[in-house]
Length: 86
Image 1: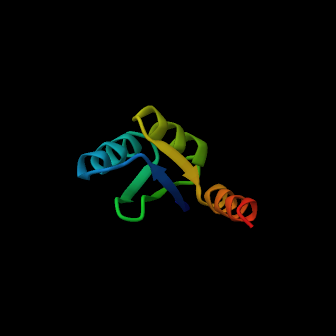
Image 2: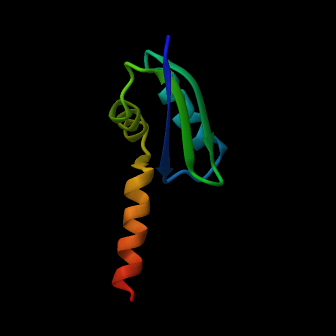
């Protein structure tokens, strides 16, 4: 079966318990194979079956009390902020 790797940022995490809660929320989703959340980089990496969608993963993070942000959106926000300060 084909799999896909999703990467996104998780904001509002401050400790190992936060990481654990996010990982647990993501692992509950049917089709998720592996989850890795890094507190230092605030980045989540999820390996899942191709039927799992990024929006489903991000919604699970939001329901767990954190804020999931697409990496491209985060880069765009940083670029927009730097342009405003120029």
